[in-house]
Amino acid sequence: MRRHGFVPEPPPGDGQPPIDPYAAVAEYPVLEPLLALCERVDSGWRFQHKRDAAGEITAIQGIRVVEGSHMDVLRIFSHDRVVAARAWLVGEQAGDFMLNIEGRPEKVIRVLVSLPDREV
Image (cartoon, rainbow, N blue to C red):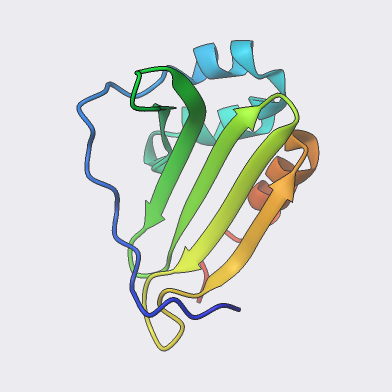
């Protein structure tokens, strides 16, 4: 666990509409396991394109904040490179990562969706 000295906050909206989850799965079929989560109204997942200064898409990022528990982040850079993280939002461990993994989507997404929905 790494201590970062801050409590992550939900990112401010950047004015872009969220990505349609079906469009994301069409572009990245390995996201299929996340689609079931996104289909639940209460899942909290929100996906957006991340862009560089020139406006080019550099990644697709999904964020989910579970109030009183943690924040999940999934950043898709390419068909073979994904980063997933889960950070505590409350308690003595606030700001610590309980998960920070990078690799192929089929491995990383499986690890992320296997975690408990709410940490106690």
